Length: 353
Image 1 (cartoon, helix red, strand yellow):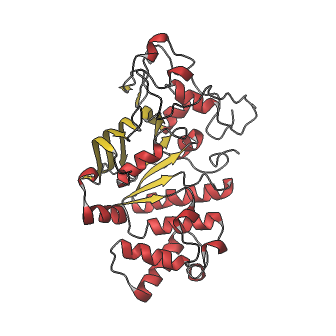
Image 2 (cartoon, rainbow, N blue to C red):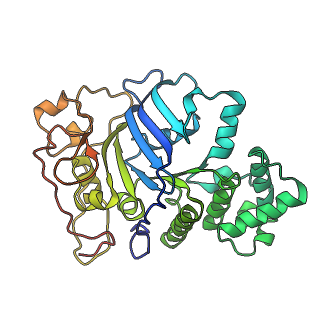
Image 3 (spheres, helix red, strand yellow):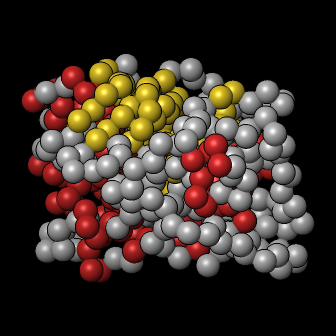
């Protein structure tokens, strides 16, 4: 299925001019007991106020775990190194009530499956009233119910007065995703984490949700971390994009540069294996092999076994991200980066030539 980026107005907006860093992850390493390698390895990532930042990679690359680190909802026994700061606060140092308040007010998560976030036997209004209470807003009774109606109206649901009395099975998937977004906005968070928030929706509904998130970003100055496996969608929708592979960030670019002149072989592979709409009918070229599991240890580049540009030395050399020196913006982590010149893409973001 083509992504919602095709044929819809999902071009990135300019960030609303704020330099406030809402999410600052610095060289975060995360290990779980019994694994041969870290789940996250030296991950650095920043999201500013009013900015949409994409986080892209195959399943198992560490995208969702990175989002969970911002909430510190991690399994027992997790070993952490590095830092995670949200709105200037050290998340890894928060405990008790401070941590609960952080999860309820400062940052909010929108999941891929809205039905997993909603109790099937409770009314939509009950869900939103509970979110208002959890956020410590002090809103109660009829005032809370009125606020729930306002939240549903803010996310574009028609007849919100009726929706608060309905149960999840009475709403479509797109409507439920709007309800979950309304719940995430109940505490007026500064940072929104959208974890595959549109991948379970049809293309038309996906585009509507993307437009809604973009509007909310512009109106409220939210920082948005947009997690997706669809690189074309991220390039069309985000201001900047981080590409992850096997728990490491392998490339970070502005969306335009990433799409038009990808530098890391893995990024090029993701673009080559993604379908687009257009007249060229280009062949989709899958990346050979499969991503390493947490049981697979490696001394060098984690992508070496699948990389068409790999040399024997790549299997023992673990590259660090370095700033691009060829006029591009951002960074990439590849031993052969100076030799591998940018490969211009032959299609535009909407899939045409």
